[in-house]
Length: 110
Length: 113
Image (cartoon, rainbow over all chains, first blue to last red; front, side):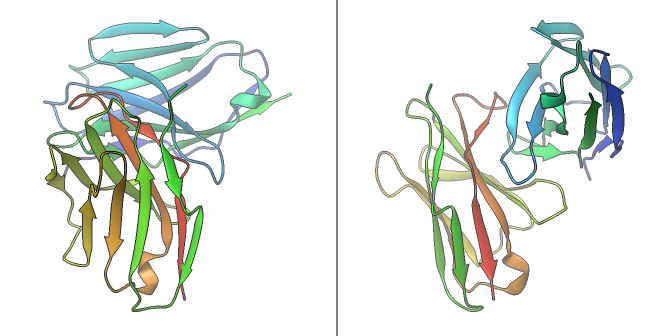
């Protein structure tokens, strides 16, 4: 059973600080990794994708991938109250259907 | 900006009835997906669809479920005989490549009474 694990939180971070979200996955052969943001009652919204080891930056977001350790992380710099949401880590299963983690509930404290 | 659309936003049905959930994927995308999310639980993959056939399905996607692309724009999920446990949010997603970024629609909330 291919799994994606995340700490469910809640993770509470002061406004303006860096939020760090982590995810581990079980399938060593996985090649692509995605971070989604989901507000309560809404659909997942793609934040970042990463395919190679190392860091990928997009605005205030940085995704980090370490395939040897089978973990992927998401950093959010200068956290804003609007960043308060559940962050979902997702990895393709066998072909392209995504396996999601349970998500980390992030709270940005004003 | 192109987006995935879904109708209806909320569907209420009686147990044992058939429902059809509809999706319009992003126009130049070739890969289509259905996911569901039971309240308070994680998002679960149901099925992927490419070139007018199912390319992958999960254990959840049993004989009660079917998918179809009836025309050049719509992508549907049919549940033949709904059960109480089918109550969930159903999300459609699309992408333009295998294992590529998938973009989700707003979802259909299905309530089975």
